Image 1 (spheres, rainbow, N blue to C red):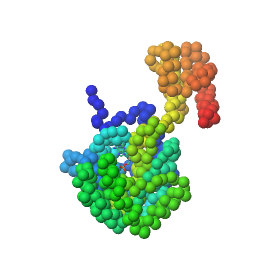
Image 2 (cartoon, protein in one colour):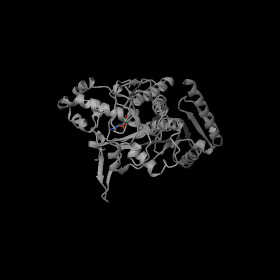
Image 3 (tube, rainbow, N blue to C red):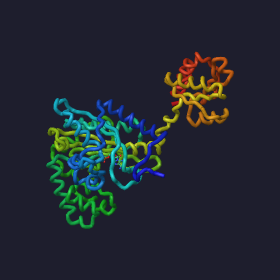
Image 4 (tube, helix red, strand yellow):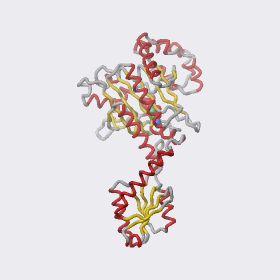
Length: 432
Ligand code: AMP
């Protein structure tokens, strides 16, 4: 017996359809905003993440899947997709033609050696976007609203969008000094992670989840009091535009995010499902001023976000947002006896070639057992073929929702199915 590895999970059957549905919708939304797909390798040189995600981050300090390959290269399974996406922009010289912004979206698996818990896996999927070569509050707002609107389109109703502004280098440097002053005589009683953060990246202490530390963080200096005039102006432009297009948000002074490359605006989408479960942030992102340059590109800025697909799907399952996704078989064929098998199977082939999803019962079952199988497969129609039908070039067509049943000549079957599916669709629209 083999089991899935700790922190990993199989996505199969109906749940896999839910994943595809979510990924397709997010992809469609990205296209509405003119983002283009990037598919980059899952393995990258470890240095890429040291440089970008940052030595001070939890990810680099303890969560990366890193190994030497047979050619002695130090390799890491990507823990996030921003770094690889920007690396590919640099390698493929997309910055060379000066046509900005470069708008990328991506979907795929990521790996972090974290302690598995609700909503937290070691292999998980992300959808994300990066908008590179920009420096406009409108672009930042565009990315924030893309995420917000995507969640609305998925059916999320009580979203909580948290926003903070980390400021330009000058503002942040003053703020870091203030934090070091404040935590200096308290750090001894704080957790080990915070002690390390104090030295490597003091901002990250604000993000600590240990209750005792949260109490200390409460009275820490606030970034908003250290923002330069330019930063303040830029931030309020973003917020004004979000107000104008109806994106609701709340300001959160302690939001810093787990990746070191963010500089300007940072944001996270939170949501508590109707069952009261909290899966953590569904997604988040921010503006980065130095990342593109750090990865070998020009001195340009960017803004991006990423959602965790696992978390989106869990919340949607809890809140029954997948209701429409159930039925997925058009026709279930029920052959009555050995003699009709050949024509029943060729009918299945014919229907599939004409675009109707079709399955057939080849197990030796009686009528009522076959109807049960059709029901379990969520079939819309049953096609029954017995010897009488075979001899008369016809079949029995049963609508499994209305239970109406008619005899149809083989040559009329396609037209009849088209007609009935149109009616079903119409009926379905009226119900909604
Ligand atoms: P990050 O790349 O850390 O900004 O995370 C972006 C989003 O990815 C988070 O808001 C989560 O939805 C998701 N995510 C991050 N880490 C995990 C994990 N270990 N398991 C599942 N989802 C995750």
